[in-house]
Image (cartoon, rainbow, N blue to C red):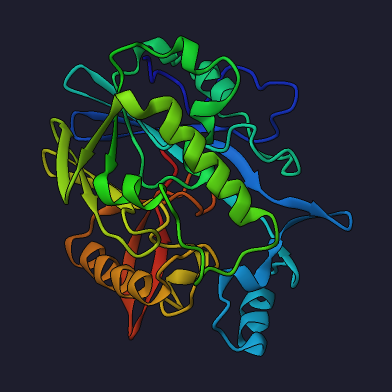
Length: 312
């Protein structure tokens, strides 16, 4: 895998209006953030997800004011979708795998495999995959047509044991999703566990995947939701998966519609955001605007996302 000039490709693809990859370094660890587009379902001619899913326990007027203050539409909100490629100690590690082609009504996602190829990453070179959790926008890329055949037979897929167990019979009683999403999530989780069962490497609480690459289970969003922490020299970065969404800095107590245990998700969010602010660790998260590299600052009882400078 070459990261040379990957944040500034020589030319764009015919359908690529913005860069889809962005390379940074964490000490001696190479990191590339790859965009799989923006999640938005077509409904009545509008592409997005209902804004109530950002905070279904919030006062509607307060939620509407938050959206208006940020020049965001009031009814439908597009969710960025980021995955990460890491190279450390001779290993090439994918952290999450984008959307794949499981939900065709979401037209602005599902190009993860093509964007890996455009970044010069051959799936056959990948030694490990780390999955923060098994929602379809994190595992779907591995299920896309032609991808599995290109993966090496000794590929290791790391996921929390609690996550694999949960998706054997998932509980959706406390989520807030549009119709169709629970069935699609169940279908994708079941298919993933069936197709990749022999390659799963489960862990209980944490596991060092490669030098300086540590995956830790947090729970909350799903029972086995995990974050990946990178450390090399004096540099540190966390890929937080779905720990925090765009509203979660100013309103960490707001419940996201995809959270299976919203109270625990909020507790985890506050704890880890405080930790990130205290140790000045960089943050990348799945659904923050690409490339999502930022720091966390404490702002009273809330937090601020401080975007990192663009690395030319």
